[in-house]
Image (cartoon, rainbow, N blue to C red; front, top):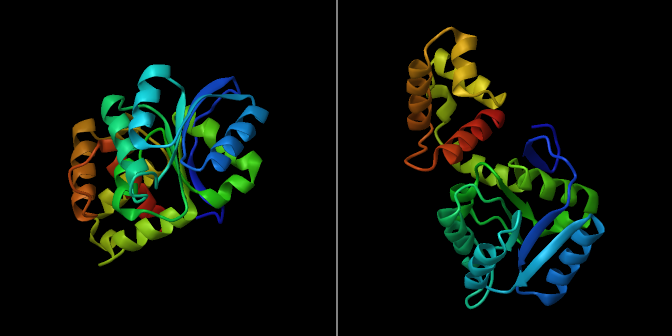
Length: 228
């Protein structure tokens, strides 16, 4: 890791105007976020305070991004994350930036993948970096708070899973960590794409990354490699 507070799977993005929905039950924080975004040239098209309203607002306004608090009414446990997963079920590639007071491991792994960010709320204090994270996620990148990475990796490290990988699987995983596609990996290693897919399946199995969206497992595998 490079010591930064979050990990970026960066996608080049132009600083064009974008539209967001904010799901946060604290009116003060919701309005504060909207003001920060406005100062950065980003329009807030809806501000909501619960999960069902988030889903409805995304479907109605079709924004470029949703910023979602983890804990919202009525129980203030995981309503925001469950609503985010519902949004992704309806629109699989829709960008979501999760803000949380704490790391919620139960659902964090289910969300991590393409066009997703997961930051602790304290990171909003660095306005420039927060706005850059918003733009990166909206452009299809991944922004993961370092604390989230640490906790997810601590779960994956049990039993030193990387030790079980074959030399070829380690090569494939290293190239995945460089952001290379299966096609690019195949060309680099002078093998077929089918062989690459077989190696990746083996990596997922040995790292105990069970059935889940491909992007989710790929990102977690790379995070495990980077945290070795």
